[in-house]
Amino acid sequence: MGTYRIKKLIEGYKVKIEFAGKQMVAVPGQKFTNGKIYIEHKNGFMKVWKDQSLCVNTFNDRYGRGQYTLYYYIWEPTQQTTLF
Image 1 (spheres, rainbow, N blue to C red):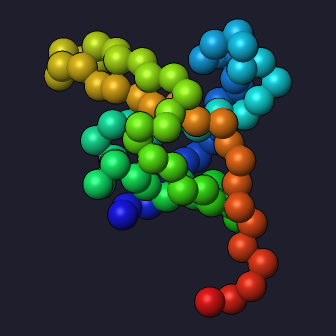
Image 2: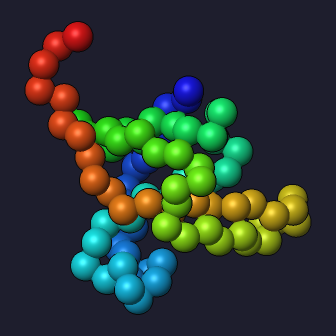
């Protein structure tokens, strides 16, 4: 299982109006290994599965390299409070 580090969160209303007031995360489809991935942002992380996304959007690349797919999740981090 891989790790995907995000730089910033997405406002939910930009994805769909029903997600207004929530923070969202978008994960590119090619980042998933075996259908799951860890997402890290600052000190929080969460584990997500490809088939449990709330919304999926496919876009054409603006530079003509084909299409890419983004999977959207609500940011609900787990805080690490102890050392391994």
